[in-house]
Image 1 (tube, one colour):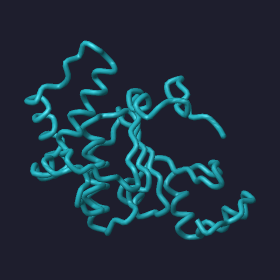
Image 2 (cartoon, rainbow, N blue to C red; image 1 turned 120 degrees about the horizontal axis):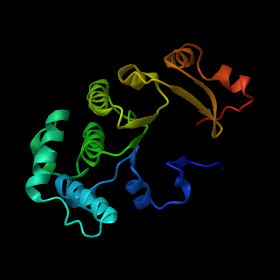
Image 3 (spheres, rainbow, N blue to C red; image 1 turned 45 degrees about the vertical axis):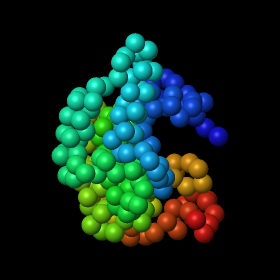
Length: 201
């Protein structure tokens, strides 16, 4: 139940491609592998699909233009150029999958990015790399919503606002101090305060 309104549009009623055209990006918790499709080909196809949807006469980004763009983004994120030739997520480590998601974010340049438990399964070094990439991209033209169960991701990202969700609704909002409070006291006091029954999840 509920609504998700962005730019006056009801997002929940849209198909995935419509949401993308609106400027929304979702980084999955468990990105899927696409054998036979390189990272570069995937990203160029995604850019051209969005451009075509906005202007049917658009001929798409040229190969030289795309190579320049992709090289710039990979250099910004400290990603080896050979990465672009690998098949999408095939044989990638957990950290590589997440870095690939951040590369997609950098290349597609959405208006709002939703990072769904991007820290899941990452060791501390991979977490730092991913967080560093996100920090390089965030700015006035990009809003980032990070979904996480753990404070360690927030330590690196230093978000402006924290929202605590329980039972499908936001029960508390605040600044970084709210994350500190949860870290120290745990979730139990919030469950009790808001009359939410704790579950194994």
